[in-house]
Length: 294
Ligand SMILES: Nc1ncnc2c1ncn2[C@@H]1O[C@H](COP(=O)(O)OP(=O)(O)O)[C@@H](O)[C@H]1O
Ligand SMILES: [Mg+2]
Image 1: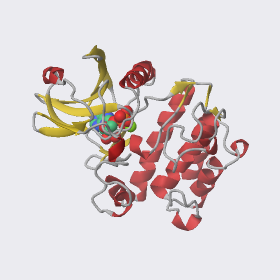
Image 2: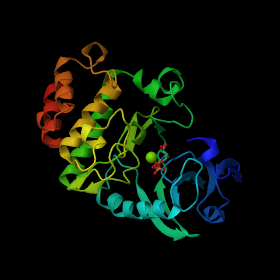
Image 3: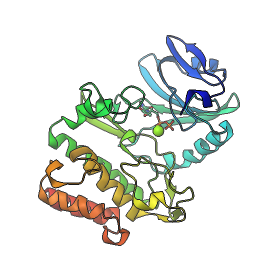
């Protein structure tokens, strides 16, 4: 978003961390939770995120109700969306999902506290934006793409097993993309963050071409108003994620694929433009993937 569209940009500092908002906001309540060691203030979600530490514990706080610099909607809408996310985290609690600890109204806004996960976001647009994500050897995405294929396939496996669980719970994934993946390069662990928009099935695309998600992993129906968003949509996203992590991302050619012919065929079928040519469910997709893996 362009600077001139913003009302103002205000600089704030909490503990040793500086960040920006469009309007001053009181965050003195964070003190009780811990000391701020990092901030995510460039989200277009309307939320602002903080990393906090107290004694030997670390937390991630997601807060709606302020005016982040890249957000142009109402803080009230961001609060509504965050409130709707609470039952989603409760019902989809899983070892591969960031763990919610608490949530409450505070200072005309809403705060959700999570356990901190020591991982790096594979789409860290605030530190490696644009091309840098792909070419800078320090970017988490670049480093991930240069990991051994088995480590990357292991991450896909975790992503798929989580989403099979999501499907079994009657939910549809919305806005899942590489920015939802946190990878711990030290211990080779991964967790999914930001499932705020996952919803109970059935749902339809009520937005049109700007429906949630990244262009590089959205299914065709995620660009069309009124289309169903369901398991087949999620099958596409899972296939697109495979191309993202072990292939040529938007380029689905075999020459860019690093995981062999059998898995390639599964990923190609998952990402068919025509919904009815894809696997019907995530369960079916995952079974085919595992069979191809062995
Ligand atoms: N539990 C967590 N532990 C550590 N970092 C996190 C955690 N949850 C989110 N993050 C980081 O904060 C960023 C913003 O969080 P996210 O849930 O995507 O917020 P938003 O709803 O504003 O999109 C993520 O990209 C990720 O890097
Ligand atoms: Mg996000």
